[in-house]
Amino acid sequence: MALGRQKYDAAAGTGSWEPLLYGLHQMQLRNKKRRRELGNLIKRFRSGAESLPDAVVLTTEEGGIFWCNGLAQQILGLRWPDDNGQNILNLLRYPEFTQYLKTRDFTRPLHLVLNTGRHLEIRVMPYTDKQLLMVARDVTQMHQLEGARRNFFANVSHELRTPLTVLQGYLEMMQEQALEGATREKALHTMREQTYRMEGLVKQLLTLSKIEAAPALLLNEKVDVPMMLRVVEREAQTLSQQKHTFTFEVDDSLSVLGNEEQLRSAISNLVYNAVNHTPAGTHITVSWRRAAHGAEFCIQDNGRGLLPSIFLV
Image (cartoon, rainbow, N blue to C red; front, top):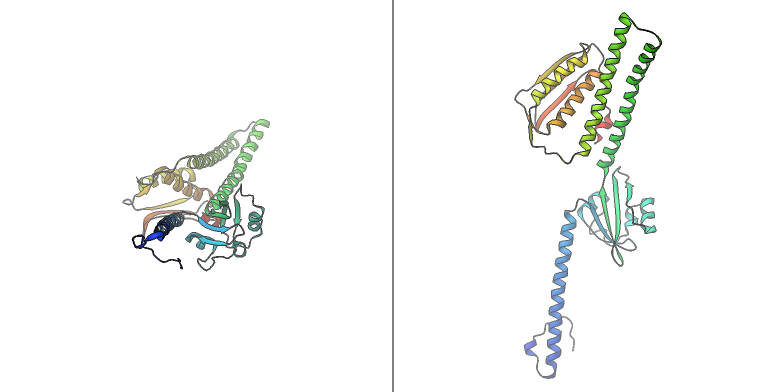
């Protein structure tokens, strides 16, 4: 008598077969319930994995892929279900990644740079006795921000050398001989200029430190940018000392939602940089106007411009 997947009706059993048929029927019901529960659990796991901001891949101990989420297809270039059963080492051909999986030391994450230039942080952990869970996070933007931060501090260190050298030179001159008349006035004027320059650099450093240390700021504060620009215009005129001419084209009705302190820092730094790095006798135009999807802040001058790497973040 073949049992197979035949459905048994316990009420139809008679005689000595009744307990056996009843037991088989109950076993089928339990197995069906377990399969349903397991299916629901797998669905919940996959649904949760799809909502993660990371690429998730499940593999065997040898690296055979048996599931991945959508971000794994986007970030790692996997194809599901086409890559089902494929060894991940054949699809991600990077020596450091191969070494990472083969050494089985997963105490630290692996930093992997793909051929596309994307930076990944990869973590691997045992999923079951013979399976592995791999999580890959795209840290490209974080890497670029850290690079921009290093460049910023390197540039500030370089910028500080010039005013310090000037101050040191004049101080040594004043120690060796008494300065009088126009020479003394020129020395004091130059030292004052370099002091203001260093003060501006220190303010930039303090602003950056404050932003890094602060929690996430609310960006729903209404900021009166026209009023802010009027203050910045006066400060720029003072900083320029009549070496430049200015035009401020400002839409007085245009305000934005954001963080006032950070906007003031960004706008003033851009204007002050234009003053400091634009040749004397040239014109600087600052505009604040409506754009297709919001507002546009623009500076036009005859300076050397900002490095393209600044805009990578």
